[in-house]
View (cartoon, rainbow, N blue to C red):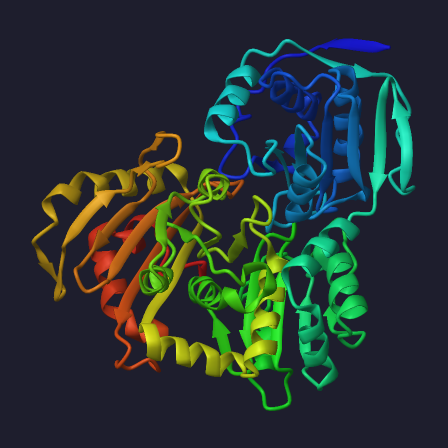
Length: 542
């Protein structure tokens, strides 16, 4: 029997770029989860009798929130819920399930690369019927509803058994617990040349994949070791843990330093990769070569035709605005569309649905294609393996050849984490106020060609997204970008992106931070980051 429970609003349920992320302790407040999920359902129409997909990255509180979500879905009239066994579904796998089974939408329970555990982070994101994150018009409606909500609907039923694959019922609603891996593995097999990759491993190719005690462990064990024949032990930290084994599941050079160090030795494997909390990000390292996410996007786009799923070429490429312009040069050479969007995977959805682009990427280590509507960490790793198998070259050789063809975009991101929000906002506002006066000026030897606050005009639906990041650039391809991130849960994260283009016949062997030193100094002169934040150095450099 449906129960209507009285509640009062929480003022802070405004979704960011990837859903509503908060500390676990915030989500544990009375009715906090219920309010947000009911606000989502109240903002949707036409789901009666339809299917809802639910899954998460296995982090702490996932199991509790999933049981609540199932009851609320049943009380609100959904006909069926498909949920991953153990509550597990990687974000790209959830996107695939929504698309494959034509579900109405899905709830993805994750805070992505943020730490987990009782003192860690938690998140809920709603994905629409195309498998992608809800667009801003939906998330704005959810937030508006959350501010006035006065009740939610649920059922007084026992928990379902998330461990048992098969069908159960909650009220009048069917709950199907599914194998979280099999549909995704089948999709990957349809895109990539598994025989060629199998032969690569059989020939002695050595790899390490760090699942970071997060959601991709079961997927990597199944695909890399069971299906592709990589030796047992190739996948490390492959058991999902509610606290990510007390680690930080962000696949970058800070949290994967041991892997990086191993790949820089003569005895290390040929290839190293990792994915994050919910399986949508990737890290790629070859022997003696770290591949930046921006370069990886360009390389994957340039070589995608080597994989069966992309043998006819790609329609176009999209990248987030802060991502380096390396991919732009590939698009130009291929004669295909190139789109620059705000940060947040939801902006790629319209372009993918319209067939305007095939491959998308972000500098924050998210890459994906039109196979789902999320970025996909394991997909990127498998496309790299397919390219390595066909080209029969190492990562370093492929990267160097790419630079000799297209030139190199030296690129770095400096993060200042948990900065006082008032200071961060005033710093960005002050810089915005100076933008109009900068074009034409010569600053530290850089002639400013443009200076603006990026506004995106969606070519598919005509919508506009303003104030997406400050851009200051020159005619030679150098760029400074400054923006506040929407994925943290405490304070503000100030992100500074710096880029310098060196042509195909230029010096591609400089240390990145040295190559960008003049731009780093100029950015600090313009924004006063060190002086105003009191931070002499960034929290993280990537």
